[in-house]
Image (cartoon, one colour):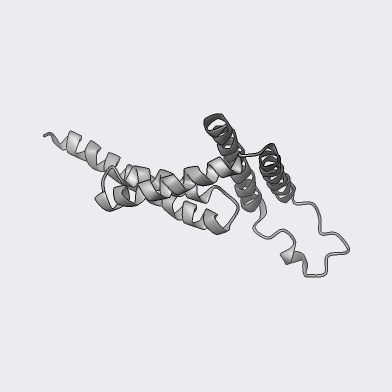
Length: 144
C-alpha cells in the first residue's frame, strides 16, 4: 500500500469521525434545544457505526425511536400544521435576530442583553427551521 493511499484512508477516516461526532453532539444538544435531535443522533451514529461496533449496537434502538416519533408527528394534519408553523416561527425569529433591530424603549434590561449572540444565533435558528421543515416533508412522504 502506497503512502498516498494510506494518507487518503487516514484522512477519510478522520473526516468521517469528525462528521459522526459532530452530528452526535449536535443531536444531543438538539434534544433540549430547537432541532431534530433524535434524527441528528441517528445520523451521527450511522456514520460512526462504519468504524465502531458500539455505535452500530446503539444505532438501531435510537433509529427505531426516531422513526416512531416521526410517524407520530405526522399522524394528523393538525400535528403537521403545528410543526410547520413552529418551524416557520423559529425561522422568523432567526431572521429578526439576524436583522438586529435597535433596542426598543420598553426593553427593561441593558442594551447588551438585547438579542445576544447576534448574527450567528439568528443563522442557527434559521438553519434549524430549514432542517425541521425538510425532515417534516421527509416524514410526511415516508409515513403518510
